[in-house]
Amino acid sequence: MNTFYTILVFIHIFSAILGMGPGFILSIIPKTAKTMTELRHAYKIKHQLHILVMIGGTLLLVTGLLMGLIHPYLFRMGWYLVSMTLFLIALAMGPFVLKPVSIPVKEIVNHHQGEEIPEEYFRLSKKLDIYENIENLIFLIIITLMILKPF
Image (cartoon, rainbow, N blue to C red; front, side):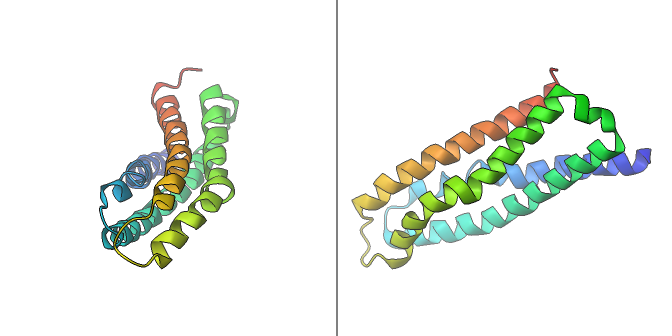
């Protein structure tokens, strides 16, 4: 069982790197765009990276729960419980916070005619950036808890 647990830890850490790493730059990618063509391309890249984030996030959750099942004492550790709670909050932010805010942004990206990026996009994307930054902060707290295991 110890070898299986070690493999789970490896997958967990690897998933964090592959999944969370790209997640931290998702909001930066569209900021470099100067035209609608560049913005559309940026959102295609963002979408591809988001797939890695979703796969990595799923593996993180599954491996984290499996490690807890193998070592049930983890469910009594504060850092583990807070990390899991924050992770579930961040996960729920996708469909309940980020998606509703990103829909009008994507509508502009997909349907705006011309090369000039409209002011409405900038207004809406600022709101999206705030929520994405909150989510990134949550993930930084989780990473800190996983490394330090303070309580």
